[in-house]
Figure 1 (cartoon, helix red, strand yellow):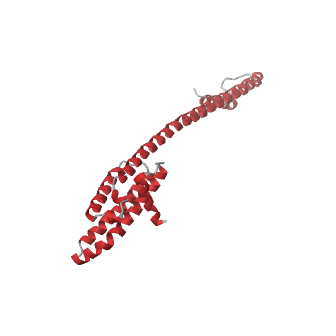
Figure 2 (figure 1 turned 90 degrees about the vertical axis):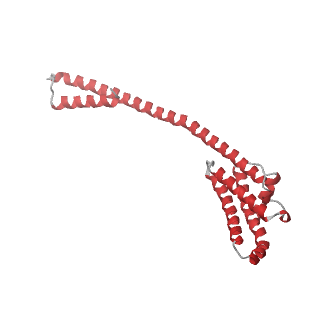
Figure 3 (figure 1 turned 60 degrees about the horizontal axis):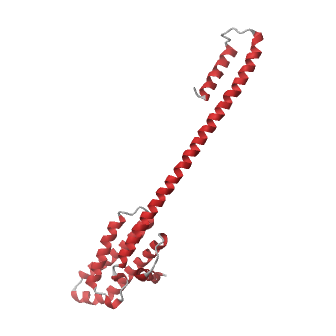
Length: 211
């Protein structure tokens, strides 16, 4: 029986004794019984306190034991995201369309490369576990989609306007793509502690166009 249950039994017995006196106890014995009942009450209270303290200690120990598990899970998630972010940034380095000089760019190859980046990012976004990486990859995707949409609209125009517009649209549109990618790549590298060097630094340098 728990301390609470035992206390309830003693209290109920005391009330019965006070109001009913079913045992017919002699009056001269009542003071002695009252003293013993008081001692029993103190003991029961002490037992209840011990039980409460023990329950509290068990709860605190369980809480402390769960903290390392949560910390390990968070650390493992961050490491997986860091590895994914590093793979994505290294993949972007393989696409020279993001940092080549203007004179080297050819529109069909630019469009094909951007489509490849967009499709690749779509696969990587599905593997993201944090918004820190997912949101930045989606920002890059949106910039790539804008470029491809603008190119598709241009292809639907009449031929003279198309030829004239191509000379005006390719480099500004590509500059916007590079700027978007540069900003997101810089933020990803900062959040996931990835060094900026080589071609990756060339990609990130485009983020300065908006600042």
